[in-house]
Length: 262
Image 1 (tube, one colour):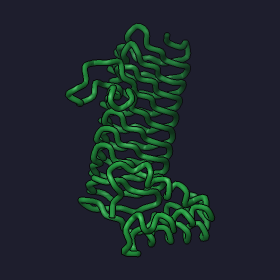
Image 2 (cartoon, helix red, strand yellow):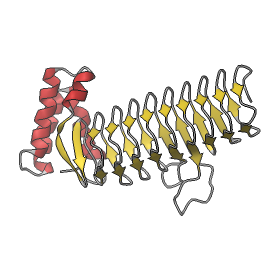
Image 3 (cartoon, helix red, strand yellow):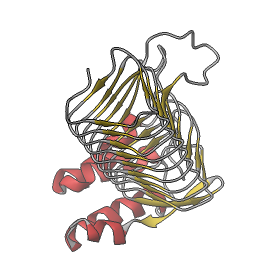
């Protein structure tokens, strides 16, 4: 179904069954598969391929040569009808690749809203990306990576499969991430290590001085006390009971499966 107000270039190919919503724009030489839904106001510049069971929300801007919803690179994948879901108001720049999920990973690769994915970003199967993120040029995510809200990742950074990146994390460029990164942390290097808290980013997002002090206190307990994780967790739990901002930091320990960077 193609809405009457959608604009489709004559050279675009749209398979029967695809849904193109109101005021969407499908530019020259794009390909839209039969199980794809393109939301209201979303723009595909040109030479964009969207395949598989893919649902793209409203007002996304997708640049040329991007590939979304294509078969993943997991050798166990047997063309099962796995999905990609993308929210609203994202900018997906040139040559970005976003692969569909796998049976083992829950069947879905999911991206939130209001994020920027710069040139040549790769998001592998079963990744879950939150809202308001920025991935710089050539960021690469292995399969099953989880990235929470308000995460900034510098260019040429690679994240190992199954890693979890907490909210408000900032990762410097050319980093290799092989373990989980708790919320609010600055990290950089190969392999990445912590370099304090993302105070500049947190201030921009309205965190108070009191909240920043509590977050830094939790950071010092984890990274500067010289104690093991099990020794500092009770103290971080006490902080979390006083400051709501510390709760995601404390909860992250239960979410971590690869161990946190130290």
